[in-house]
Image (cartoon, rainbow, N blue to C red; front, side, top):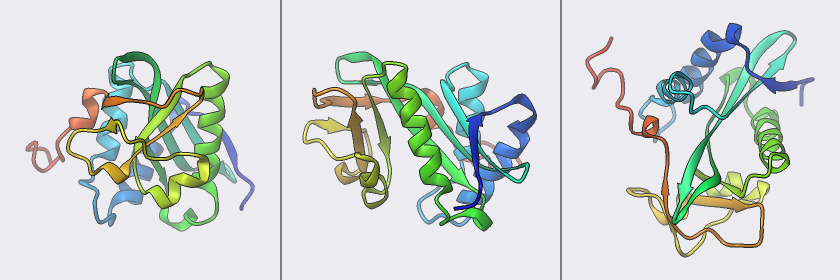
Length: 176
């Protein structure tokens, strides 16, 4: 892995974060290309609880977002990971993993109950995420609904994320 610094985003990196998310998901087969809009909506509403960037040689090359989520009857202590994005020329070098690990460490140290996400199980299992029989995210196949509890209790119920995750693609919303 390149020499990477992981740290909280700064206001001067907001445009870079947009570019990173657009570029990272441009050709992704299941993306609606709304990741940059989700991050912006989370930030604009004060729901972007943890936003980290990866910097290499002074260039912002990766980003990860965490926002609060409710899980079943529990409306506090859970966070949703996503999106996580790395510029295409910097992918497959461990930068995304470093962002995930740093973010999870910060959540743990802050006393979070755990983290949930919708994503590729083969990627996220390396961080300890797994599926749980009684955990669901509306409209998402069960095998892609993952959680990492920081305590012993298994998460149960429906995950409810911030409304930003329901944002429509720019073209569908009539924006250019």
